[in-house]
Amino acid sequence: MIRNQWYAVLESKEVKRGVLTGAVRLGEKLVFWRDAVTEEVFCIADKCAHRGASLSRGKILSGRVQCPFHGLEFDGAGRCRLIPANGRNMEVPKQFLVNSYTVREAHDFIWIFWGSRTGSLPQLPWFDDIDDTMPYISMRDPWAVHYSRCIENQLDVVHLPFVHYDTIGRGGQTLVNGPLVVEEGSDFFIYVYNALDEGHKPLKPEEIPPPAGKRQYLHFRFPNLWQNYIIDRMRIVISFVPVDEENSLVYMRYYQSFIRVPLLKGLVNKLGMLFSIKILHQDRRVVETQLPRKHPTG
Image (cartoon, rainbow, N blue to C red):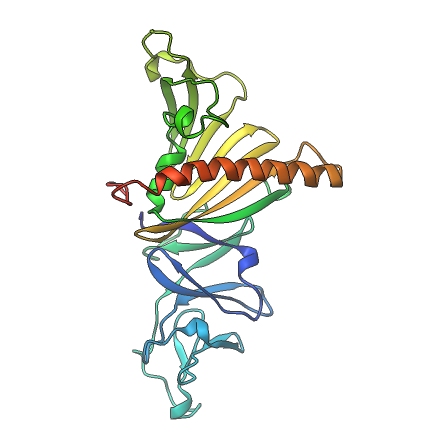
């Protein structure tokens, strides 16, 4: 897992006001909650500094998390502000502290910064050509594999005619020209030029001319965002969420804005999502069998 990065780890709708949300992310047990007044989201370690009880089993009191075991109260910075047994006027020892994470909420995702918080933080990663007015429907899919394997799979164009033989890989185009990969900072754009094998030698990436105009491509943005740019008004977006060394969550969204009639839009969105889920599960069926579960460079 790449440190000092913003990770989209939950959808906004999963963190509700007045409710503690426990989740394992980046190999750590975490608890999230939303301020009742400001709507700000906080994230701290889901382990009380006193006896190690799960804080997510507690409750929210005046914006703080109250441990269900002995009532210790922790703020959004992970500092214990009250030990009831000692009295509310007694100073809390400094060692009563749990890890906390910087949180941002944007594009209907909850993001945490995983790493050192010294100096200024980088901007949240997102796709400049998708704004918050573009409608979408979403789903969450658990994969029993490290998130690096999920990312590797979605950037692999060689598997298409085999894994997706009856969907997006129809036609038996097993010969791979390129693929052409364009790197721009922390962004990678992958263009697919698969073709039928008619006995000819595949083109090398440098032999493929730069793509002209708007054509379909795959777009990966570090550390865990992926987009299938189908057309300007239709995209598939995935956040590959690290759970632990052997598990991940795939948050998939189907965006489309070319149909606006409510009933027809709902039908198209549903069909588009069902087709996308079929493709995703074709991938999952194979990727979950890979060993080791974590990519060697992950």
